[in-house]
Amino acid sequence: MDYEFRYTYTEIGMRDSTAQHRYRVLNPDNLQFGNRPIIIGISGNGATKNKDANGFTKIIQTYLDLMFKTKDGKNALDYVDIMGIKYASRSEQGGNGYITKNFANQLTDAMIKLLTDQNGKLLSLDQACQNFSRLTFFTYCQGNFSLNDIIDLLNEKLLDLGYTTDEITAINNASMEVSFAALNPVDNIIPSVRILSINDPVVFSDLDYLVATDPKIKNLNGIALHQDQPGYLYGKPRAGATAPSIQIISSNLLNAYSGFHVVYNDHNINCLSFNQDWKLKPCEIHGKNLVSLNAQCAAELMALSLCAAVQHSLDNLTAPSYQPNRHWHQLPAELQYNIDSYAPVKLAFPTTNFTGLKRQNTKEK
Image (cartoon, rainbow, N blue to C red; front, side):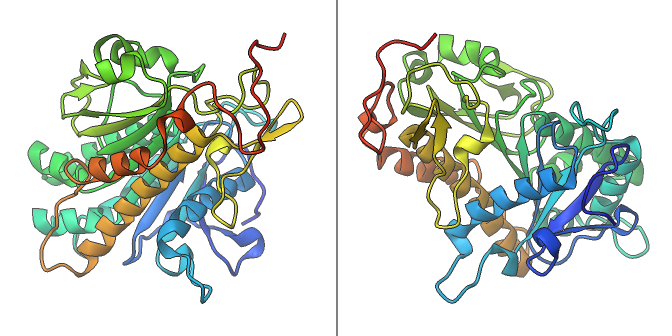
């Protein structure tokens, strides 16, 4: 298949160091998940080209360098399959991408193969959870909504196959989603770690309740954690939140610049991207290359969360029985430890950036 997009199709590809552009487009009619951890990246709805999906998988790979990159040249692709989804679009110009019904069926059918035997019979719940734990989802913006739709469809199929509602919830809870700027404030079907900024112009209104009710968030000037048990999301009762969630809330990711952000703002995932040396890429804002320590900390927390999900997959590949997801009980302490490793002033707004340039006291016009 062509690396470039055909706008009427949703496609899926895999990060592959031997392929052109280090990305290989897969045949969704014969999609299979191997016996290794798998991360499926679902980006925002502007990802309507395969190069967009590839770029998203590259971001994922650099996060996993924290866990897998070694001096002898090993990297995440030696241990993990990293896949990316390219949206279909209603025009050749792209934008407003969506996942077609046909592709959603193809993807969920591949997931069902993990949960049934060769004859299509149901696996034991323990084995089904072990198999489904291979899957981790990394989403951005609209990708969070898209994942919810995919899992809804999967669950309908599992119910038709004979799994009970409680068994389906248990299977869902064997996976994990790490999301930046999640667009769905109502549903949370997969245990999630959500990274959000109060200063994000797209999702800020979703956090109004937390800002009003959670003392840690109300006067936040840095980064704080919030946890929700099933039945709640962002502190509100939500029937569609059947899985627990951890929210990493930032007051201002781009805390190295006080002026008006044009190209970059707190909704832009590129401000949380690492380079090949696992250093945060600077943001060029009004001619200044700035690295914001708040964004750096948030990116590290995102990487830690992804690595925890992959470790959960690896543990279950060799365990004699299903090992429960440690997402809720152990991960928050690890995330908080990383937050605490930064002096509060480094995560606060305003601050001074790495280059020593002083922040402006007034916004540019």
